[in-house]
Length: 465
Image 1 (cartoon, helix red, strand yellow):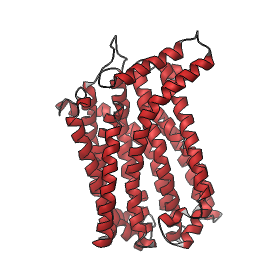
Image 2: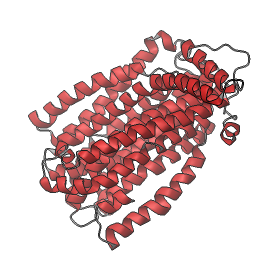
Image 3: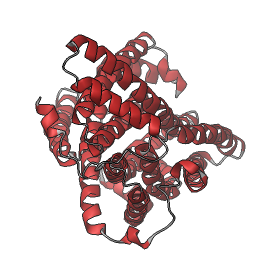
């Protein structure tokens, strides 16, 4: 099998005669059993596939369920911030959408992408039983991401003139800039969060992050309501609360790492080794960032272009509702992305190529089925979903027209992030970057501009793109 041959080249060598370690012996035993099942050609193919699927599903659900919950809750914090802003008025909804999707996603994509280097290296190091390197990789990534956050903060500070330069109206640009100012602390929360998150995921430690994120969401909702409506701090208050909530998550996860016995082999304290090998680490981080940024920036560009259409407030409002829903559902696929990356990188590190290839198939099919079910539900409620975000009937009608295109997007997004997760687990970030350039920038954006401006299809053009 071609996939098997390509999956036999991990970045780190597999363990030599080691029986595993860490605190996840059940996972290691299941992994060995899966490879044994797939390699036993004396058993009929159908029986092998059924047995292997049962083993793989147990491991995937154990990884994916908490990961999906974490990503959905984190996204719900951003979504709730946009909802609070949207109920202040249509201008505020457009401003929060432009600030959140047009500016903030820039930092999110860059930080998450660079943090994916930790996912590759920690996953393979854990599979190869090189436990002490996980903490070093996490610290090294945090150093790089914190340094990257400084120019991003400057970019945020000058968001108003940048948006005006890009053609946005002064009114929307001014309101969006106010929202963005409150997101500056969030940049550095991202810089700490993503390495920590990938460090824990590589060890199949998912549940603690889910508990911390759930508690933080409850705090975020209460405080955001008070700050926005009771204290009257508006857009700035909403975005500041989002930044504070992200820092709560970071602190909670780090306290867990330092105090938990599950990380006793992988976290051995701060080390000066974090500052060594930075150029090589930066190369892998940059490849990871380019891979993800080419994808996230595509949606960011669509939002910016939508602000140039006729009736930009309506175009931004309707498109932002659809993209917010898409982003929420996308978090399910991102959770499977994390699970796929952990499974593939762990199996490659342990020298189990058949298990790695089989995991790719199972997680892709499972994610596709879930996305198809969600798309059907979204289509059924197409006339009502916009009222979650805003009370405007015009926006509801515009969203209803965009929903069929949204449903198709959701199904495709059910597969794409999972395959990206496989690529991260294998260290194929550069290949995915080339694919993203062709699909998003050579085809998607020109097609959207042609349909939106020449054929005057409005926001629907960018749903089609």
